[in-house]
Image (cartoon, rainbow, N blue to C red; front, side):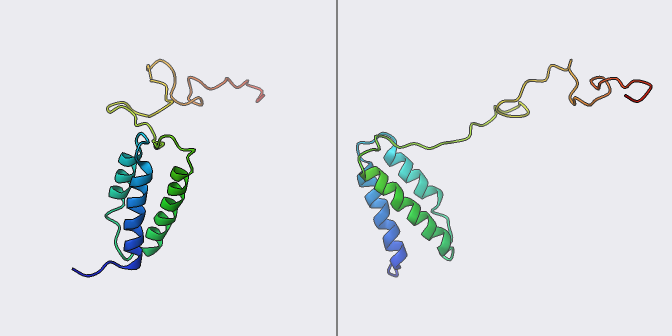
Length: 115
């Protein structure tokens, strides 16, 4: 097997450092592993993206080491339940109200004189 490139060694070192810094913080180790697994399939030729993710990881490591972080999580967008159209914040359609406020049933009446 060939030797790792400098960037590969840096990424592996970052992974180990993040796991060490995340010990004792709820959710940190699982989040680090999930993040690295998510991006493990990046092609080696995508150096710009790898370097961006490396810099982002270094910033996260600084935050974990600073002592201000007590846990680690992620913001995720909630999914709409399967089988229901729309998503978060959508009102259920009961079929009684018009779908479009400008439908013929919901449009304001126009006077014969054009006002």
